[in-house]
Amino acid sequence: MRIMVTPCDGIGPEITAATMEVMESVNQAFGLGLEYDYEDTGFTSLEKYGTTLRDETLERARGYDGIILGTQSHMDYPARDKGGVNVSAGFRVKLDLYANVRPARVRPFLDSTAKQMDLVIMREATEGFYSDRNMFAGTGEFMPTPDVALSVRKITAHACERIARAGFELAMKRDKHVTAVHKANCFHLTDGLFMTQVRKVAAEFPEVRLDDFIIDAMTAHLVRSPSRFDVIVTTNFYADILSDLASELSGSLGLAGSINANAELGLVCAQAQHGSAPDIQNQNIANPTSLILSAAMMLSWIGERRDLANFEAAGAEIERAVDEVLANPQTRTRDLGGTTNTDAFGSAVAKAIRATT
Ligand code: ATP
Ligand code: MG
Image 1 (cartoon, protein in one colour):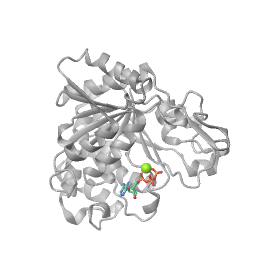
Image 2: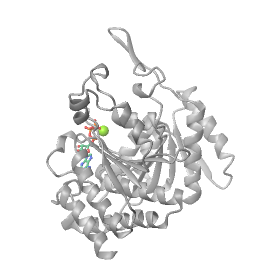
Image 3: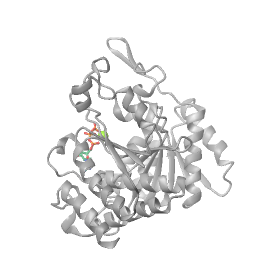
Image 4: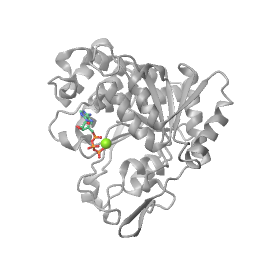
């Protein structure tokens, strides 16, 4: 099995290095036969090749069994015509990794705002309110006059239907409860189309309970009673914001792992939910749990899809070892009130894996 690893910018290289130490420990313990190829993206790619993301990188990525993607800085970023391509969007859109799976759960041994919560946000990742994801590539936002700016949001029946189906399929393996989040009371056409497709898919899953909230009310409900939600399905922009809220309710953005996946194509990319955290980059203090858990999700996804018990076991073992390390206040990173560094946290998780396998 071959994994493409691209650390990118910001805290990306630091959390990727910690994640790779953990990956290597499960690779050996579970005989996964993983091989890694490192690929430049972000500023290192810009310096070498004049663009933050080369087309050939994406072409090659299609041939891998999995991808580990760091974080991309948006500070001092060059314009698109100077080589500044959105790396994350490039992977998600060009490789059609439409399902961004974003779990958030409370660990009883960690201090967190939410007391009970175990949910998964299914984020549609290929369209919506992002100019670089728009059908008019790069022109989703424009200024008809110097003092008027417009933004175009693209919502398609196809994209809504497939993210809804991914959500309902996930719900069948969990609590059989889907919450759709929208603002169809204002955005009648775009969010209206989203809800039409969600209800259409819901009819195929009579065992799954469907409810829905408008995005503004949803933020209040999520803070007030986070335990009432299980699978949340929503469009790209709402999910972006809602998942930061959910992660922070669970203790820290640094705990938030995710995968971008396309089950039909068999492509999966591990990526932290947060951004490049420029305020803490190059200090060895970021919490790498996010990317470590993303890698665990990737291994479990590969295992489930290809019926490989050792991959599923490796994913579960990383989850267990991360919880073991987080449970000890001595081995927490700064965002969780500890003093452990990024690299030392990765080593502690790898050690916990070696100790039990
Ligand atoms: P970007 O534009 O790349 O998204 P941002 O300024 O929005 O950058 P985020 O990465 O989204 O920054 O992070 C928001 C806050 O959460 C920052 O204060 C950051 O330091 C913190 N944070 C994010 N990821 C981590 C992490 N892995 N460990 C610790 N703190 C983190
Ligand atoms: Mg951010």
